[in-house]
Image 1 (spheres, helix red, strand yellow):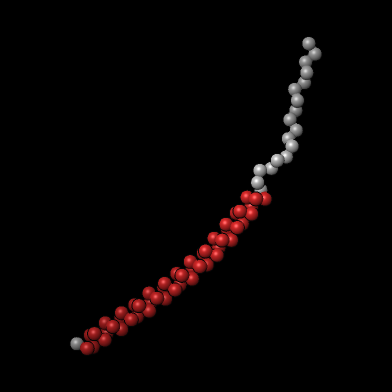
Image 2: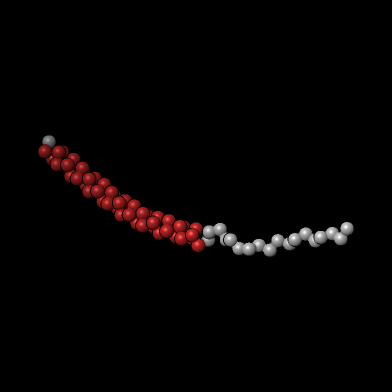
Length: 68
């Protein structure tokens, strides 16, 4: 009976270790993605500021006056 309990406890401990490793790996990945997201947001904001609406003078041809 003790052997069965010990075996089950060992299996559960291995699963616990595996899950803990997976959670740590996901946390690391989330932090990396957050960093990338901040970079993309900053790039997008800077791009919008520099490529805002251009207020250039546009040369519109004037209609010719008729000589009537």
